[in-house]
Amino acid sequence: MKELVIQGQEIKLGERKLIDLPVGVLTTHEPVTMRAWVVRGKKDGPTLMVTGCIHGDEINGAEIIRRLVNSPSLTKRFKGTLIAVPIVNVPAFSNRSRYLPDRRDLNRLFPGSSKGSLGGRLAHVLTTELLPHCDAVVDLHTGAVNRANLPQVRVSPDDDASLELAKAFGSPVMVQAPVREGSFRYVCNENNIPVLLYESGEALRLDTASIRFGKRGVQAVMRHMGMMPKRPAAAKQRAKHAVLSEKGHWERAQVGGLFTPLTALGKAVKIGDVLGFVADPLGDYEEEVIATQSGILIGRTNEGQADEGDALFHIALVKYPNRAEQRIVKSGEGLPDIPEKEDDHPVHYDPYTDVV
Ligand SMILES: [Zn+2]
Image (cartoon, rainbow, N blue to C red; front, side, top):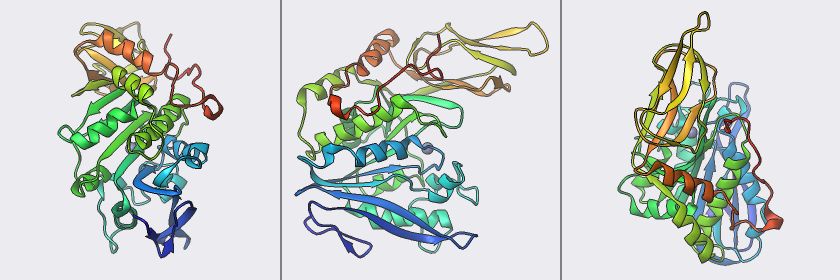
């Protein structure tokens, strides 16, 4: 692809432009504009799109893209094109909400329509103006409000091309998850464009480990696609540590009450383990939350209150939980893909995800 024209603007090899994509007008009469960075290397090559904030409050994605676009690795031996949309769902982001102003979920409205609702138009702009230029997509998400996720990528069960990208991304855990109709992943599949979904941290919060793994993962995908010089040793290391799970399982509260977790994200869990407890706020009764499946803890609520049936712990089922836990620990060590001078987001102790 020598010539690249988006929204009537040509982006030449070696150029970077911030392109405004008009979507519609809000109740305040202010325009809604999706803004996309288009960064092209001096040499032609593949095109990767990275999207953030399809859910407006999942802001880790915007920060990952901000750091990625400002990274010096995009100026030197960079080939091909990076299209990066830090905030897809602009009105939801402004409202600090997961949903659109009409309370709909943008990730159920793809491919959208030019004459549809505001969300449908946002979906349509992304699908028709940007997606046709792309060879692969990384879609960045987080857990919900007060629900933290261990860094994980999600791919469709029978999608080998996406699984290959997921392996290159090198997230601690890969979870196979079917695609929902109307999601951005769905429309990528329909267009035969490999896509992986990265989920890490929680909504409304910037989480250091999530941002660091996310930025490293996108860069590793770019290396895998030949957009940046390969680092075979680091890629091999990541592949060695990857944990693949074919299924997830939620442990729910058996009674309502005050919830205290006893297990941290990334830990091995075996059937019968006590993961936490729910206590009667007005009495001395405590109900243990017992694991009914074995695996790795990849998600957890951080709320101290639970109604009966509330989802508390998300377990990725794996055959050898202890081995998987060791691999997860190793996947964060050294982070060999980030040279020291570029290490802008070092991991530190996180009181929200590290239970002592
Ligand atoms: Zn999301």
